[in-house]
Image (cartoon, rainbow, N blue to C red; front, side, top):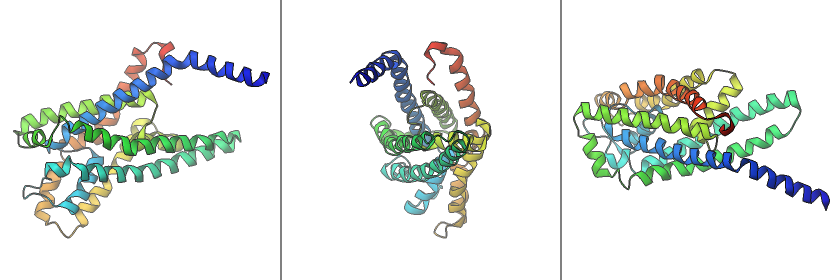
Length: 277
């Protein structure tokens, strides 16, 4: 009875000490997720290159739904329900790879520590990733309440210079949101957790791991585009020009380093007593 009371008192003490930190972590998670998905919704209709993840999704949508003669997807497809459906499926695939990397990393730690808690943590990671598989597409649909298909069409048909500025704004918001999200260390989702788990497994630096995985993420989209027989080579060329552009290069080579830079900056801004990790 005394032991149970002592345990309850310890739990209450732990909660009282850490409630501010956990409140801050939850706030950072929600804020980061909102900014990340808003930036994503903003740049998708610009057709000046998309995130490597989105290019693979767009390649699937091209084969599934077809494209216009100018090599672009209809905005109801690129920003619509079918996009979020394919995104959820691709996230589920990334989640399995992330879980595999985490399992290998946990096994290596177990060989040293002989503690089974390393494996127990895997289920927490899996559940958190699974939540994002459903939550992120929901957030993207939520943004459609104000970034409507009509607005997306206006962005798509705007002059190239304007589309470039809109893309830049979306890209920066995406990077800022991802950095804030990573800082929370909560519900990181398949896109973020696959990098962290691969980094732990391989002992690579964050930037190197991120760039390598980004190439791996875009590779299926390139293979699908080149191998499909239902789309002419002329349309394939236009599709590549629209969606593998300056924006895609920026995401592959600049996104990871920018996020890493922002994470370091956040560490400087946050007082030591308010560190989230």
